Image (cartoon, rainbow, N blue to C red; front, side, top):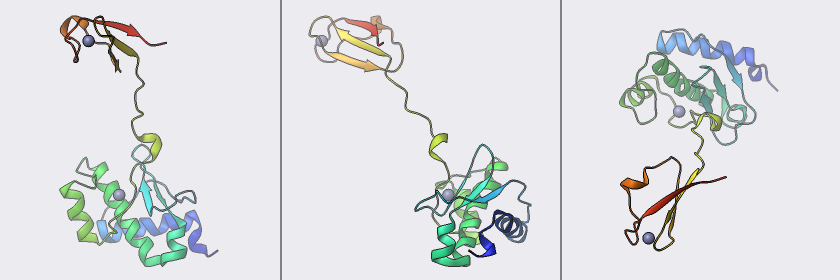
Length: 158
Ligand SMILES: [Zn+2]
Ligand SMILES: [Zn+2]
């Protein structure tokens, strides 16, 4: 273990890179996250914290970690400035190229992704018996069966 693998070290490191390359301070928390597997790091949209994968430091060294830090800081500064902070946004790509950040990371942890909604309703055709699952309530008067154009009935599941 080197001293670089303490959160205090990482915090200072990110603060320095932020001021030097972005000219804006990093005002949130940084930490090593040992549970990140193949990804370099991530920026958390809710807390604005940055997590870096320590395996990157062990396997690829400080230079690679600094590129990952720059990548996460691109998300961070653009998000806080309400600009295009996602990978596909032109502003993100431009800033990343300007500061020389790494191309890859995972910006959103799983828990922040929208959970898939469960099916709550079932439409049943009176004529042919075909069933359709729906997440939201639908007005059965407006629709007919897609198979036979028969009348539909709405049932709630559970
Ligand atoms: Zn990213
Ligand atoms: Zn039908």
